View 1 (cartoon, one colour):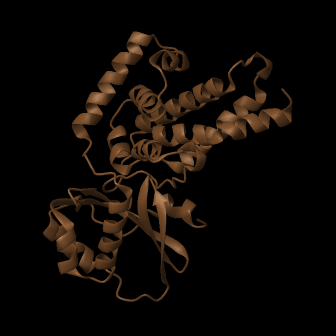
View 2 (tube, rainbow, N blue to C red):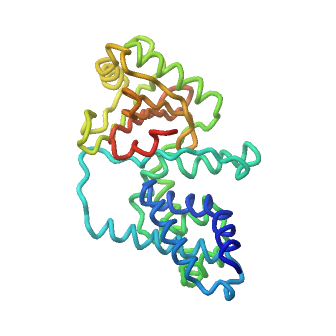
View 3 (cartoon, helix red, strand yellow):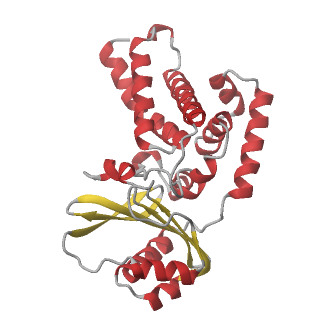
Length: 294
């Protein structure tokens, strides 16, 4: 395999590798670093001995992501306030040829799921991602991780039970979700408390992630009254220097707020029973920097 061919093979699989790494880590920059490390190992490998490049590259990427997760857990870094994943733009293109496939892929990178995955062990997370997001057979996951198939099945079952117990259930109809998102954002931007209250579920939650580097609640807010009043209180008083951009992030519609062209906030909602059930606001500038040119 020539260098040019090796590069082509890697680039062909880059979206898959990035998808695995991001779902494993919940951090765009870390996922990009892992994929770059995978490229370096691929470029130095004895590629003539590699019969299945896809499996080889996924194995490298998964193991690198596991190592990165273990390093993060070992450091035990304290995070100021609630934690949310870095927003991940999800333009699946040919990777999701129909609505059903798109829904599966979107759900596998949803903020609600990735928050729950943070509480899994690195091996549990790897097995869950490979099995649930990418449909790998247990035998193939066992080979990728150098584990026995019974052990992999046990890890998968434990991870699935953990996720099922903790992940909220939301509606995934994209049309309804976008329509409610637009109405919610219009009411929030206009400081329309009555409009907000008509859209918010009684037990709605607001999760704000600033990492202590921007203004955001340091605890999760609960109930429609508290969430509605908070949103009205922080509604921009002037549109000078502000601009908005709709995009698809983590499988659903989101609004990116820019101040003088720089990303300031990303807002996304989850919907249940026709109402806004959770509001996510990412304000940590480190998590928004990669969206500057999007």
